[in-house]
Image 1: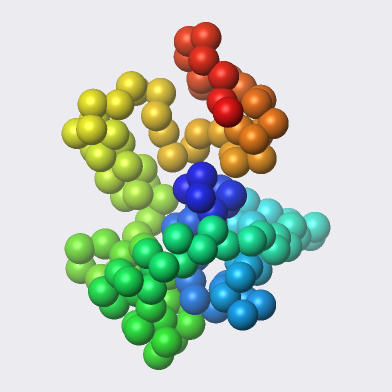
Image 2 (image 1 turned 180 degrees about the vertical axis):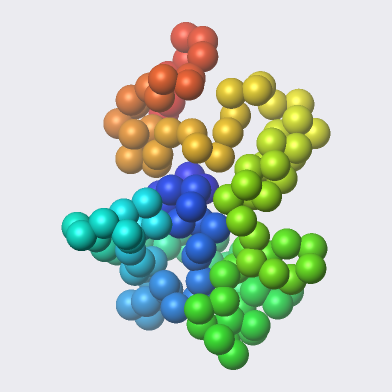
Length: 129
Protein backbone atom coordinates (compact mmCIF):
# COMPACT_ATOMS: atom_id res chain seq x y z
CA UNK A 1 0.00 0.00 0.00
CA UNK A 2 2.92 2.29 0.59
CA UNK A 3 3.67 2.14 -3.14
CA UNK A 4 0.28 3.70 -3.92
CA UNK A 5 0.10 6.44 -1.24
CA UNK A 6 -3.53 5.29 -0.81
CA UNK A 7 -5.55 4.33 2.24
CA UNK A 8 -6.29 0.63 2.66
CA UNK A 9 -9.93 1.02 1.56
CA UNK A 10 -8.82 2.83 -1.58
CA UNK A 11 -6.26 0.16 -2.46
CA UNK A 12 -9.01 -2.44 -2.20
CA UNK A 13 -11.28 -0.41 -4.53
CA UNK A 14 -8.53 0.45 -7.06
CA UNK A 15 -9.44 -0.22 -10.66
CA UNK A 16 -8.25 0.57 -14.18
CA UNK A 17 -10.70 3.48 -14.49
CA UNK A 18 -8.62 5.32 -11.85
CA UNK A 19 -5.45 5.14 -13.96
CA UNK A 20 -5.30 8.34 -15.99
CA UNK A 21 -2.97 10.80 -17.66
CA UNK A 22 -1.26 8.31 -20.00
CA UNK A 23 -0.99 5.75 -17.19
CA UNK A 24 0.99 8.06 -14.89
CA UNK A 25 -1.55 8.90 -12.16
CA UNK A 26 -4.30 7.48 -9.96
CA UNK A 27 -7.38 9.76 -10.02
CA UNK A 28 -10.04 8.79 -7.47
CA UNK A 29 -12.25 9.93 -4.56
CA UNK A 30 -11.13 8.62 -1.16
CA UNK A 31 -13.40 5.87 0.18
CA UNK A 32 -13.51 7.27 3.68
CA UNK A 33 -14.83 10.59 2.44
CA UNK A 34 -16.98 9.51 -0.51
CA UNK A 35 -20.21 9.70 1.55
CA UNK A 36 -19.45 13.15 2.95
CA UNK A 37 -20.48 16.42 1.37
CA UNK A 38 -16.84 17.39 1.04
CA UNK A 39 -15.26 14.72 -1.14
CA UNK A 40 -11.49 14.38 -1.30
CA UNK A 41 -10.47 13.85 -4.88
CA UNK A 42 -6.96 12.47 -5.09
CA UNK A 43 -4.59 12.63 -8.03
CA UNK A 44 -1.43 10.71 -7.14
CA UNK A 45 1.50 9.66 -9.30
CA UNK A 46 1.68 5.92 -10.00
CA UNK A 47 4.93 4.21 -9.05
CA UNK A 48 5.93 2.79 -12.50
CA UNK A 49 7.07 -0.66 -11.23
CA UNK A 50 3.67 -1.05 -9.54
CA UNK A 51 1.89 -0.40 -12.83
CA UNK A 52 4.14 -3.02 -14.45
CA UNK A 53 3.11 -5.53 -11.75
CA UNK A 54 -0.59 -4.77 -12.26
CA UNK A 55 -0.26 -5.22 -16.01
CA UNK A 56 1.67 -8.48 -15.58
CA UNK A 57 -0.86 -9.98 -13.14
CA UNK A 58 -2.95 -12.52 -15.05
CA UNK A 59 -6.49 -11.24 -15.47
CA UNK A 60 -6.02 -7.91 -13.71
CA UNK A 61 -5.33 -5.65 -16.67
CA UNK A 62 -7.14 -7.52 -19.45
CA UNK A 63 -10.26 -8.13 -17.34
CA UNK A 64 -10.29 -4.43 -16.50
CA UNK A 65 -10.08 -3.67 -20.21
CA UNK A 66 -13.57 -5.14 -20.58
CA UNK A 67 -14.94 -3.21 -17.58
CA UNK A 68 -12.57 -0.52 -16.25
CA UNK A 69 -14.45 -0.33 -12.93
CA UNK A 70 -13.52 -3.93 -11.99
CA UNK A 71 -11.36 -3.90 -8.86
CA UNK A 72 -7.82 -5.24 -9.24
CA UNK A 73 -7.88 -7.08 -5.89
CA UNK A 74 -10.09 -10.15 -6.05
CA UNK A 75 -10.75 -13.12 -3.80
CA UNK A 76 -10.23 -16.77 -4.73
CA UNK A 77 -13.64 -16.87 -6.39
CA UNK A 78 -12.79 -13.89 -8.60
CA UNK A 79 -15.10 -11.55 -6.71
CA UNK A 80 -14.00 -8.15 -5.36
CA UNK A 81 -12.37 -8.49 -1.95
CA UNK A 82 -13.75 -6.75 1.14
CA UNK A 83 -11.93 -4.72 3.79
CA UNK A 84 -12.39 -7.48 6.35
CA UNK A 85 -11.20 -10.27 4.03
CA UNK A 86 -8.21 -8.18 2.98
CA UNK A 87 -7.28 -7.54 6.63
CA UNK A 88 -7.43 -11.28 7.40
CA UNK A 89 -5.32 -12.11 4.33
CA UNK A 90 -2.81 -9.36 5.13
CA UNK A 91 -2.53 -10.47 8.78
CA UNK A 92 -1.93 -14.08 7.75
CA UNK A 93 0.71 -13.00 5.20
CA UNK A 94 2.48 -10.97 7.91
CA UNK A 95 2.32 -13.91 10.35
CA UNK A 96 3.63 -16.31 7.70
CA UNK A 97 6.50 -13.90 6.99
CA UNK A 98 7.33 -13.68 10.71
CA UNK A 99 6.67 -9.94 10.87
CA UNK A 100 5.77 -8.21 14.16
CA UNK A 101 2.11 -7.96 15.18
CA UNK A 102 2.07 -4.19 14.67
CA UNK A 103 2.39 -4.68 10.90
CA UNK A 104 -1.10 -3.85 9.69
CA UNK A 105 -2.67 -2.64 6.46
CA UNK A 106 -3.74 0.51 8.31
CA UNK A 107 -0.16 1.59 9.00
CA UNK A 108 1.27 5.05 8.45
CA UNK A 109 0.60 6.78 5.18
CA UNK A 110 3.39 7.26 2.65
CA UNK A 111 3.49 11.04 3.15
CA UNK A 112 3.82 10.56 6.92
CA UNK A 113 6.65 8.04 6.47
CA UNK A 114 8.44 10.36 4.08
CA UNK A 115 8.21 13.15 6.67
CA UNK A 116 9.48 10.77 9.38
CA UNK A 117 6.24 11.06 11.37
CA UNK A 118 5.59 8.15 13.69
CA UNK A 119 2.20 6.51 13.84
CA UNK A 120 0.75 5.75 17.31
CA UNK A 121 0.82 2.01 16.47
CA UNK A 122 4.58 2.13 15.83
CA UNK A 123 6.68 0.38 18.44
CA UNK A 124 10.36 0.68 19.25
CA UNK A 125 12.93 3.36 18.67
CA UNK A 126 13.16 3.12 14.90
CA UNK A 127 12.15 6.01 12.66
CA UNK A 128 10.90 5.75 9.11
CA UNK A 129 13.26 6.89 6.36
